[in-house]
Image (tube, rainbow, N blue to C red; front, side, top):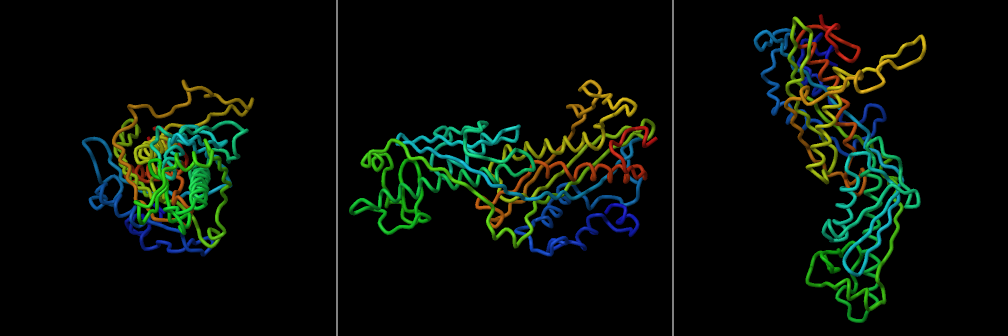
Amino acid sequence: MDELAHELRMDPLQLRLVNYAEHDPESGKPFTSKALRECYRLGAEKFGWQHRSPEPRSMRDGKLLVGWGMATGVWGAMQMPASARVIYQADGTARVASATSDIGPGTYTVMTMIAAEFLGLRLDQVHFELGDTRQPKAPPQGGSFTTSSVGTAVRGAALGITARLLGLAQRERGSALAGEAPDAVELFDGVLRVKADPQRSVPVADLMGRHGLVEIVETYDSVPSPEREQYAALAHGAQFVEVKVDPELGTVRVTRVVEVTACGKILNPLASHSQEIGGVVWGIGMALEEATEIDHRFGRIINANLQHYHVPVNADIHSIETLFVEEDDTLVNPLGVKGMGELGMVGIPAAIANAVFHATGKRIRELPITPEKLL
């Protein structure tokens, strides 16, 4: 894309905008949602892209060559079959379980948040358990589909608890919830109430006590909706990168990154920004440092430890700004969430390579971009 823009003497961002796809080019299907145009606009504005001088080697900071590059990240907004169990207790607490895992993206936290949201509880009233195959089944963690898959199951189980409690209430004569459908009521702070008229409510502990219950157990199996098949479900992002290159040493520093991501609803903003920052760092490593060196005589990896396999450290990382454009997308799944793990990384190496070309006039097509490739 960047090479095409250069040959056409066209701004790389403008090239993308005039070829913007309103339908998925591969399948012809409409997108469940696509806020990539807004990602481009916001990212360019925050980065100051309009001040970019188009010619390679035309921007400098003292003796350093300055390059500005941009790219696009796309990742599938996937959902896998998953199950979760909710045990709602009369004392106003809940235990939630699913045989998923947490390899770092915050599964413990976000599942607790989803359960608390739909059970009307505080976070400290919900205990989420994972990592045991005796728990309800869940997919492996990878591909950025854990929240959409397991989270949808947790939501379904919590709503099942609400429906069960409503059924108990409506068996009682003169119930304040008589005639209400399950989607018209909600759990909130220990009461089951009508959303449109919160005064019509029933204390849950009293309700369960009258029916001799200390807990209610609900297991829910979630699957992608058939409606999804009619659409292309993708998460999108735009990356804008500044590099500074020492022309005498060939060293490259990524001095500034603005990444804007559209991945549905953001459930946990603090952790989400942290995850996207991590994706940028991961992309810097891929672009500039990381490579597996193999001795093909013996099939051995030469740099099989962190002494010789180079990854970014604090001194390699400068300004990173992450922004989100939220999408209201209930077609992709009931929570409206899309994966963001890989999405935060996939466009960064391309944006860095494009920035290096802008700085130096050298097009490097093999990663990592190390000094000897630029000298």
